[in-house]
Image 1 (cartoon, rainbow, N blue to C red):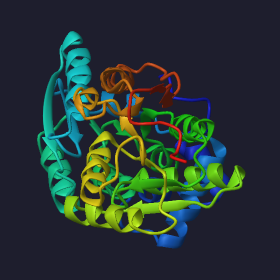
Image 2 (tube, rainbow, N blue to C red):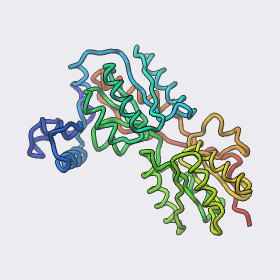
Image 3 (cartoon, one colour):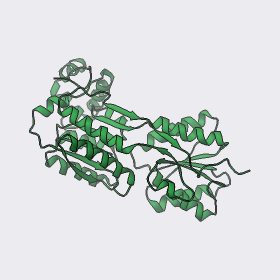
Image 4 (cartoon, rainbow, N blue to C red):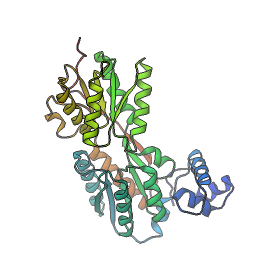
Length: 337
C-alpha cells in the first residue's frame, strides 16, 4: 500500500525511539497513556525522521460514508465561502458529499464541531483551525480518518496530518517590500492573536522589517471594538505608523474605521495593505491594496488530498504552500512629507 512519503513506518519509528508501536501511536494521536514529555519527544523524532501516517491503510480498515467534512473559522468571511466552493466542487466530482460547519472563532465550538463530525463517521476532514494542536488532539484522538489543516502548516508537520495554505513568507515579503519601495519607514502589522497563523506572521514581519533597519510595530486585537481602539491608539502617537499591513482584508476594514476616527486620509496620511483579496475589497474607499490568495484552489486541493489518501494514493507534497500575488490598488502611496 503506498504511503504519503518514504519515511519510516510506525513500527520502524518505534524501534528508532526505543518504545512500543502502541506508545508511538498514543503519542502521535494525542491519546492518553503517555507523558507530555514522551509525547513531545516522539513528535520531534517523527518529524526529524520524516514519518507520515499511512492514512490510506487506515481508510481501508473502516467503512466508507462517502462524506467529507469542512470546518471554517467564520462563514461571514467571503474568503471562506470561496474555500467551501472549491472544496465542495472537487469532492462532488469524485462522488463525495460535504458537511460544512464553522467554529465562529470559538475554541469550544470548534472542539464540539469536530466531535460531531467524528460521530457522523466522515471519511476525512479539512479544517481552518483556531488552534492546530487542539484540533489534532481532538480529531486524531477519536478518528483514524485523514485530516488536512488549512493555514496551519507547523501543527501539521509535527503530527503527520496534511496541510495547505498560501505562502506566508511570500505574502509578508510582498507587502513589506511594496511599502519600503514607496518610502515608508514606520510600518505596522495588525493581527488577531487568537489565530494559529498569527505568531508565524508576526515573526516573519519582525524579521523582515528589522533586516531593513526599522523597528517592528505590532498591533493586535481579538474583537472589532478592541481592534479599532488599539489602531486608533497607535495612530494618535507622535511616532505613529505611516503604513499598516493586516492579516486579513477584514482587519483592514478596522484600519479604515480607525483612520476615519482619527481624521487620517488613506492613502495620503496612511497606507494600508490587506490579505485575501476578498470580493468586496476593491469596493472600499479607496480600493484596498492586498495580497491575493486563491482560496477556491486551496479548497479544491484540500479535497483532492483527502480523497487521494482515502484511495491509497501517494500524496504528492502533503504540505503545500500556494503562491500569492500583490494586488496594488489605491490604498497605498508614498508617505506624506
